Amino acid sequence: MILLYHHAESIGLVDRPDERKRHVGNIPLIGGLSAFFGVIVSMCFEGQSLLFTNALLGTGAVLALTGALDDRFDLSVRTRLVIQTGAVLTMIYTTGVYVHTLGRLFGHDLELGAAGIPLTLVAVVGLLNAFNMMDGIDGLAGMLTLVSIGAINVFQGFSQWQSCILLLLLAAALIPDLAANLELVGRKVFLGDAGSVMIGYFLAWTLIQLSQQPQPHLSTVDVLWCVALPVLDTLAVMIRRLSEGKSPFKPDRGHIHHILLNAGFSAHTALVMLVGLAMALVFMGTLTRNLAPGSNLLTFAALTLIYVALTGRVYRAQQARKLSDAVEPALASLAGKLPMVAQLHLSTLASYQDDDDEAEQEAAESSEQ
Image (cartoon, rainbow, N blue to C red; front, side, top):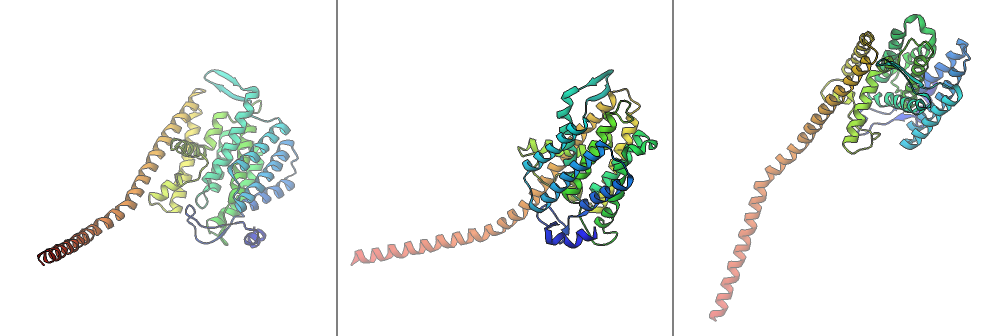
């Protein structure tokens, strides 16, 4: 991280404040790259040489590089989606791993077969972009990653920790970035798109692999609860943007962390609230495991509807209040100027009236002569 920090400005990997980004000064975007390099080095010492892990690290490197280029040159949405799609399809072709079954739901084993390939594509691309979108306040994406990794171990049992060794190494590699991002030690750095995309990508594929094994310890519905908050918020934001006639990928300040900031909470308070909410959702997921197969999915669907409706309503109320606050001073200023305008208008009319009277008087005098 230290090496990247000193070269971040020269290679253009810095985040500059604008109308959406409210931080102060240029902040290096090297936290994610540092974490990725940490994972690579750790995996070399760990000694695993599995096809799935190697393919995941290779395609993850492509996405991390793409994220760094996006941080530097602001790549188009189409370019990013094409590269992300290529990475996912490469993983499927190389490893043969994809969502081929949804498990037992409503008394039936739902096998997808080849239809699971497009579902896998949507799921992976969706989750990596969900974590990218949640990277809006200091520490949020990193903390949500730790919550998700903890949730996976809770759902499948801590005795199965070796099945997600890559995620555990990722969690360890994120600690220095979180400490710097929250300004607990050293100078401030940001995760960057390279980091947030890499996090979502590793989580997505690990969850798919764990849930698609012959005797899985993690069901497909458990997967949703492990990443509940990023999934819920991304769905809510995209649905709202589409309802407003906008592109679902057009950035705005309508995510849950923006809503909390606009409500007057500080960034640190919002972080604590959202991490607490993410943990509460995981706990709710553990409770739904005791329900009949399918009922836990219906619970998640109902929660999604509530979340989408509630956040959408609060966001629209905040926007209406913001518009009202912007318009009222202008109207008050205009109202204050109206008496002056009226007085000027009356003065102008009086001047015209005096000119007319003088003209009539001159005309009368000339006619008498």
